[in-house]
Amino acid sequence: MDEQLTKRHAAWCSGLQRAIETDGWGQVVEAVEAYERLAAQLTQEASQFHQLSKDQSRTIEKVAGSLDLRVKCLSAVDGERASPTKDDMEDVLEVALDKVLESVLSDTPQVFPLDLGAVARRRGTKASTVQVVEEADDLVDDESLTAAATAAAAARRPRRKGETYLDLFLDKIGLKDASTYTNPTLVISVIDRDGNAMEEKHETFVGSCSEPQHVSFHARIQLETSLKDMDERGAAIFFEFYHYKPKKRKQSCRCWTLLEMDEVAAAAADSTTDDGSNALVLELYQKPMDPKRKRIHLFTVKELYLHLQLTHKTTP
Image (cartoon, rainbow, N blue to C red; front, side):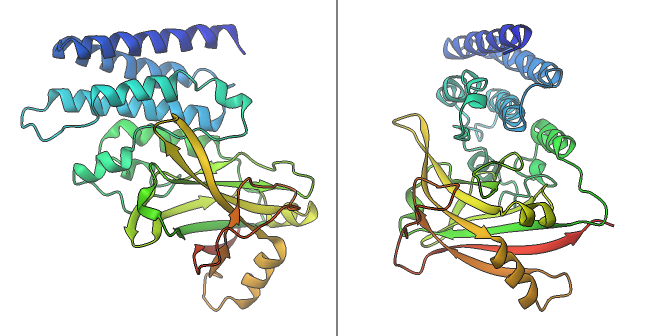
């Protein structure tokens, strides 16, 4: 790990710890200044470290967004903004910022401990439709998360001209206990027949239990690997349902599913829409996810599935 990055990371954590302590002492003005100062530092300094992965950069941007939200909460005079709280900021420090550099060593994606979507909904902002790249700033109606969308778009691998790619619309997942999950997300991977990842993982923002036995995401994902490359390497697209366990302060995979190339081809052949899109439902499997597709067991016999839509896009 880069020594300069390690030093800056330690400084960020110390800065957030001091801000939280000041917040806890009831020194509102000083706490606001400390949070604002650190948010600016994170936004400016994190972009200078190119060795950060896309997921790590997004976590840091979410931390900065959380700091901005806490500032607005402390600065509110109408008493309407009750969250995020000081305790929420402690979770942001302990679970997200403190461990952000460790995530590069783990295959388990990091779940952000603060449900920014819930904060947005309490503030009356649009949070029902979240597009991971193009609409990330719709999650909260402040400019604090706009940087996340910009950074993600910049980091995305460009699509090659004349080749066909997949756009995914992740609608919802069926679970009998859907309302019990904290910070539910979907993690999407493209993995070849040998178990090797072909691009970085994608993670949706936090979903919501909008109907009985279903967690809705309404998230759009643009895959970076062409259909040709996926087909040549016998790849499949994997979807893992993750949720956050507050007591254990960790993320856990509940179930998973996959989409193989023959299913993609069949969906394209069956499409009757002008844009070539097609709705699919995928059965769910028991954890752990097996990238080599040798150990696959049904998660439930109930009619509960992952609902998504595929669209084939050829780059002009």
